[in-house]
Image (tube, rainbow, N blue to C red; front, side):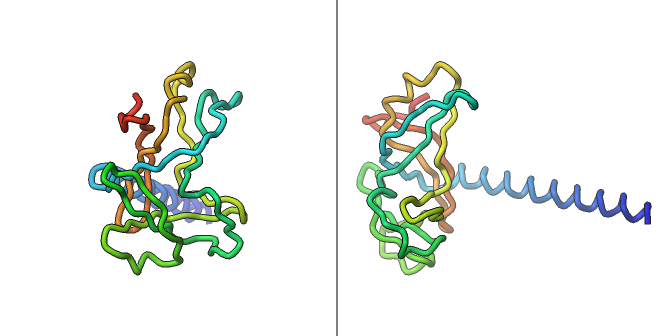
Length: 162
């Protein structure tokens, strides 16, 4: 039995490494070929004493929603204006149907007052909070399946804050 224990441990380690590399490759692909969407930020406190400086993000597309009647998981359908800023159109349980010029972003509803799109925190170097206070938009790359990846914060002139 001892011999099989090490084989099982090794097999689990290989599976874990394969999964980890696959998820990294998917994120890299999303960064390279995803659609950039700017989500308007709602104000929130940008400090954490335990974790250093970070900004807990809340987006205007997820405000004024009573999600009791929304599914716990689904898609937020958005349309982009000519500057690439997203406007919420509706929520739906499946990726389709979509009208021309509409995109989907996956969401989860942890309670009836909030929805999360998976990019709710932005960490930055300690002492840089002043620079990020002027952030008005979160830059998110999305793919055709609604997966999203936060790539940065943008100011009012749509410049990436670095």
